[in-house]
Length: 297
Image: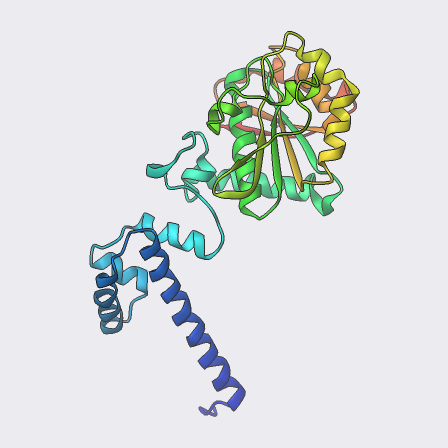
């Protein structure tokens, strides 16, 4: 076998080595920018890296200068995969996808995301999906919030709307306060749509439920709601609608009908078959599809 490489192969090797060096340098700069490394630490890390043929992050860890979490955060920035370390999270711990993206729970949620991309959001023909449950403790709001983050981590432009105007939860998950939202928009109490951007997820926005109205079902039944969703579909890749549980009200049917499909959240040792079967029938009655069911622990 010829051990010599051609000029083009040599060029590829040199380019690959240069790319690796740039990547290592970027990791060091990101760790410095984050305050995890001091300028005087860089020389020590680089020396150990050369002596033991380590990656930059490994060398910094061996010297006790950074933690595995620090490295993961720097890599997430380098690969444009935003998340928030749990220790620094300004959002609810419920946002597993944002605060613990490498956990078993987050990986299971990514599987749900993949299924939805294949079965519902494929080829961009559908953009809106409702997420509901029979009871408030079955995790529909948790599922909707985490899927919104996961789609945003892919670079999709995502809008999460809390349509549960009776017992809203997304304003707590994303720490949005009790300001204006969907109810105010449908009641024409505000002149225009006001969504909340979520840092560091630059492509994720949330529209909270808004002021508690006396007539949620009537507001959702207005043509304004359908027109709102149709208009939003021109601006967003994915719109997720967190709905009120079926045992609380019939609001979910109005939302499912507008969305065209609903994903059902269930919880192990909590959900019961009879209410779930009834929920499925009520969804189908609206003309919407039951996209699937997710079992949460």
